[in-house]
Length: 248
Image 1 (cartoon, rainbow, N blue to C red):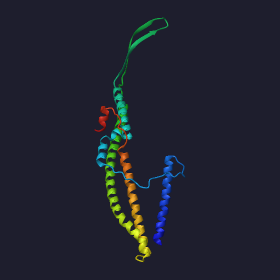
Image 2: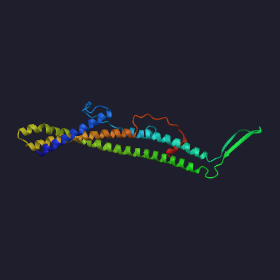
Image 3: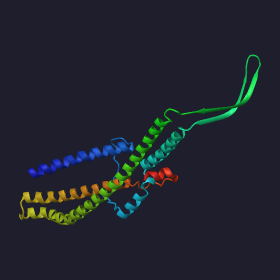
Image 4: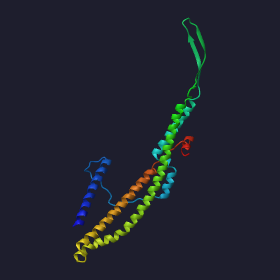
């Protein structure tokens, strides 16, 4: 009876989890909580091609929106930095000058004005713009490096989960066969009620383990696709020196 009680408790827990997930799904879809969204009963585990994933990493910075934004931000900041450098040199303004006083004396001629940054030579602004540019470079390189590491880790996890799923699936037909024969064996007196419950429970536990691994594999598929920007078009980025400096 203890095994039956534990099984019933596990069933109730799963029913509550299912209800919570359905409500979360309805909220994401903008549906009322009582709407029942038809879902497929069979999971299809997608297979990720590790070679295709590694090829996608080569041009990751052209697809991931966050990396593209950092590249554009770096290019913009690089222009600000160069403008600040130009600002340390004198600004020359040349033009005509015309004036007339109260006695109607008029003067006309050229006028030249020049700003001399003789004190700090705009070094403060240069330092600020340079530091901001370096910060964007560091963040870009950190995110790119993290993406490569996370993809490698996700591929390793996926290989592990796939191996475990194959092992669990291989044992499933045997346990299912025992569970199918358990009821008739108990009625014939060949096994007791405790053995019957154990066989049926083992079959359900194995099925649950298979479903859990399939779900984890699907989550890894989504994680890898997100990391490599799968389905995102490549952005047409200008080939300027500022972009090349990001990889140095």
